[in-house]
Image (tube, rainbow, N blue to C red; front, side, top):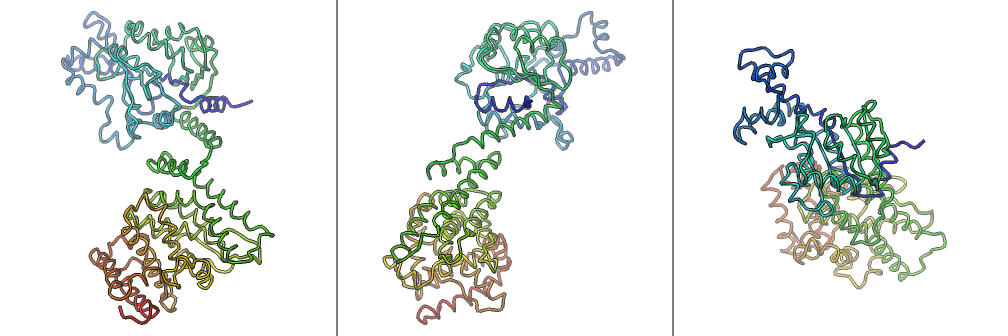
Amino acid sequence: MIDPIDSLAFSMEANRGVYALLLGSGVSFAAEIPTGEQITSELIRRLAHLKKEDCESDPHAWYKQRFDEEPDYSILLSQLAKTQNDRFNLLKEFFEPSEEERLRGAKMPTLAHKAIAQLVSRGYIRVIITTNFDHLLEKALEDIGKSPTVISTREAAESALPIVHANRTIVKVNGDYLDPKIRNTYSELEKYDDATNTLLDRIFDEFGLIVCGWSAEWDIALRRSLERCKNHRFSTYWTDISEPKKKAKELISLRRASLIPIDSADKFFPDLTERVIAIESYRRPYPISKQIAVARTKKYLVSDIYKIEIYDLLRHETEKLYDDLSDVYSPNDIILSYSDLERRLHQFESLTETVLAMVITGCFWGSKTHNALWVNSIERIANISVESGQDSWLRQYPALLLFYGGGIASLANNHYDTFAKLLMEPIITDGIKELPPVSSLIPEKVIDEGEQIKIFDGYIFNKWTALSNYLYQFLREPMKEFLHDEKRYQKCFDQFEYLVALQRAYLKKKQGQNPWGPIGCFGWRYRDLDYNKFTDHIKNDVVRAGNNSQIFEGGLFDGKIEKFLDIKNDFDNVVAEQTFGWSP
């Protein structure tokens, strides 16, 4: 038999925004929020203590005997606290956490409130009816930037937007703790004003319903609202931690509700949210264009609540790219000429376009928590497998595009931690050794220098950096959104190639080898005095910050300024020797 929670999850996912929540005190129980009756009893105890009388055995009986009337929350509160500010200060301790309570999570949004906020944020829930006085739902929504409309009085119900036009609405049928006219006694719970009744009638008629934490025993007017509803357009799901009581059973039968036994609201709502998201992820139509992929990447980068979505999105597009690239290397697809080789490179560029745009966007706008996404994507594409005998060296060209695009974007927004991760963390294997991109994703290794000259002769700024020149031209368009100014783009491009070269030279020197790094466009663009100006600008920024320089984030140059300066001197001499003997 299908789990009723699965049935609910499928129904919610297929009918986004159709279900309303009806929540009772059971949802806030774990947060240690007292009920109105508990607050009334506590206020009576304090009043009895003030009178130096004992009421512990039965506070309500004491009050009736002492004042010759039944205790009424509203009357009691209005007499103990005359003004709104007085009432707020009196009730604050019951609903707002003290420092000690905050530390242990009391009177704070629970797992249930946070999960409900996610469902609201995703548009699955638009209306919440609650008998609770607290602000936990509001806080959970505000924490993710989704402030709701709250209806807790007759006036608010009368002036509220029609539910169909409202995005997030919380209807507090028994009032808000800041309002002294909350409904708490039997007579108060017996009748609602006309505006509230009209609002509830529309909700119960037009929405499906998920009930949690509500016994249905005390809220007479709310119960009557449900009984008045003759239409059941969508299903009702009633959750309970035990056997429902008599009134609840009657409503379950009336609405032909599905009963879902649960352990607690804190387990039920996160479980339900997880299932709905799982179905959504499976059914989600993945991007059909680069523009859609970029738009979704930007949306998902905004908050950690989308960490699953952005992971799934990039993983799907990366795997699609991996499969498309693998298909290119069919046994019968043989490169016969340089024009064939150029055709294949352009084919790779077209296939890589979407993932490249996502990686550029992510490395520019993302945070440290997203770094693993770009690292994993580059690693996956760099390790595409090809059959023996094929042009395996060409297979890393798409990964080279991702490496350059992500690295330049990182530097454009001063994300040196992301930059360092891209240089050092992806593991790329050639079947014998495992190397990071800084050692393997360099133009000379991806395409032989001699082949570069023949393929990219239309882009030769200097024949020894033909591929670097081509990459500078090719990446200009996808980088324009983030680097509008041509000089700024050139600076970031050259800074990327220079720092990659320095880190590679540093690794070579640590291994006791010649401190060589790939000389990109910068080696020829800034010949003579311009080279010193270019490299000294980077050096001066580092010297001013010392070991705290952002360049050392992620462990480049082992995080030491003296090692950076040492390898810079060595590498600049290598550049001088290879660019026609000028002295730096």
